[in-house]
Length: 259
Ligand code: PEP
Image (tube, rainbow, N blue to C red; front, side, top):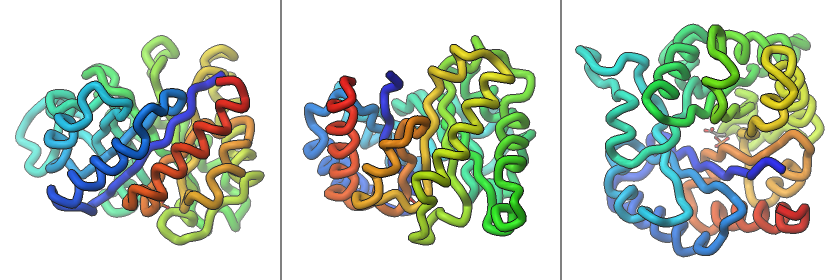
């Protein structure tokens, strides 16, 4: 069985005091849960402090973005090595907000995935269609292009820790969640595509997260779907109680399944 993941994307929220408090509350609330991989992706400025607080805990840390070069004159950017040096194990790549506001293309996403792995981080590569694309019946085509483009030229061995997050753009921060069936349809397509591109074993073992207005009251139904292996959670990760509830709900579900 694939180990589920509950990841919080804090986006550009939380100053240092707020971030420390939130991380502390999550750490306390999720203490002892060992069948869910818990990941926090705070703003860069808070990672170092939270890393010290969560060392030897069940919480892993991730960046929300990275640059594809190892270092250089790229004002405002952050490298994979820098993220690693403050305790990150993961990095979100190609979030729809990065694609929309910072014009990240599949080619850029691919370069970042490559750089993350080369530098020892686990990439969480985000894909997802806009509302117009869904309404035009192009969801599967768009997601297929994003997955194929982001992984272009990279081998199965190289990608053995890759995590994919399916996040329909129309569901991010809008309160509109994809129904479990809508999400499952796309997750199943991604898994089938990974089998075609690589192998059955590679496809079976990949974790594919759903993201888009996941909350305590819809997380269970989403996590019950066969090809949904966790959640990448924005807004609802900013309050410790709700976030911890989602971790516990997922933990109980997987405990029932025998994980
Ligand atoms: C996200 O930022 O990845 C996300 C899914 O946001 P929200 O949960 O707020 O929709």
